[in-house]
Length: 424
Image 1: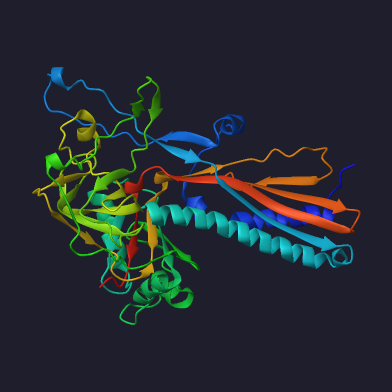
Image 2: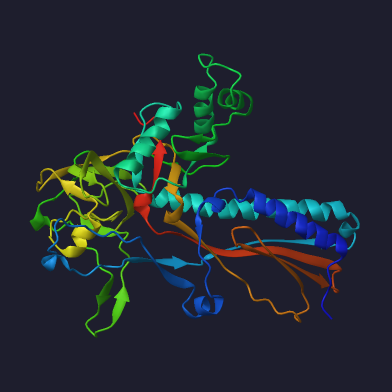
C-alpha cells in the first residue's frame, strides 16, 4: 500500500505551490507553448518551433513577377531542464512539522531560481542586440537606448521586459529619486523609498539578486573578416536541407559559421560589430544607420566562429535573403575590422520581447501504485511541480523530493538583447 500524505502535508504543498508561483518572476514574462508529452518522448523531447514570418510588399497593380515562395524558418526547442530538490527526514525529525515546511520553502525557492536562471541565461547568452553604455546605469537614457534599438529594427512595441542586476537597477532608481525632481508624486516616492523603477521607456523592469557576468573580450584588435561577395561570409536562410540520400531535415537559422583572420582569445558570449555593416529594419529593410551587433556562440577553429544572428546582407540576391535581410554593407572589404563591444567585465542585463522566448512545460509520468505518494500542481505559466514522499521501513527514514521538468528556447535572438554598463 502506498504512503498517503497527511492533511498537514497537503496544506504545506498548496502553500509551497502558491509561493512557487509568485517567485517565477522572469518565466511569467515569456511565451508558453504546451506540447503533447507522448509525442515529446518519441522525439527525444525536441520540437521545432516556427520563427515569425517576414514578408515583403511591392508597388503597383501588376505583381506578375513578384509571386515568390515564402520560407518558413523554425528553431529546435528542447525540454531538457530536469530540476529536483530531494531530502530526507528521520522519524524523530518529523516530530517537528515546522522543519518540513521550512525545507519545502527552501525547495520552492531553489526550483524557482533554477527556472528564472534558465530564462535569464537563454536571454543573456543568446540575445544579439548589444547596447554598450560607457558609464554606470543612470536611468531613462539607458533604457531609451534599448528602446531605440528595438524600434529601429521593427521589434513589436508591446510586452517588452528588462531584467537588471541589483546595482544597475538601484542606480536607475537613484536617477528617478534625485533631489532635483519634485516629491509627492508616485514615481519619485517609490524610487526613493523602495528603489523601484517600474515601467520605463516602454520596458517593464525587474530587479535581479543574481546576474550573469561576462568577462571583457580578449580578442585582438587586428581580427578582420572578408565582407566581399567572394568571401562567402553572408548567409542564405533556408527552411530545410536535403542530404545526398534525398532526406530532408530542418535547419536552425539562428546561427552561422563565419571565417575570420584569427580567433585567438575570442570567447563565447563576446559581442562585436563589423566595419560598415549596418542593421536594417526587419520589415522595411531600410538602414538604421547603426552598426549591426553580433554575438559569438562558440569558437569552432583557429579561423572560424559560430555567431548569431547570421549575416543576412542580401549579397546573394536570393528571395530568402531579401525576405529575412537583417543588415546591409555601406562598403565591403577583404579585411573589414571586427570591433568587440564588451570591453570591461560586468553584468549582462537582458531585455526581450515576450514572443521571442518560450518556455515549454514538461510532465513526469509517475505510477500511482508504486509505493510512493505523489502530489501535483501547476503554476500560472503551466510549469508542473511534483512532490513525492516514500517511507523506508529499514531505516525509519522518509524521503521527499520536489521536481519540475521544462524547456526554454530563444526563438528569435534578434528580438532579445542585453545592455552592459561602464564599458569604457
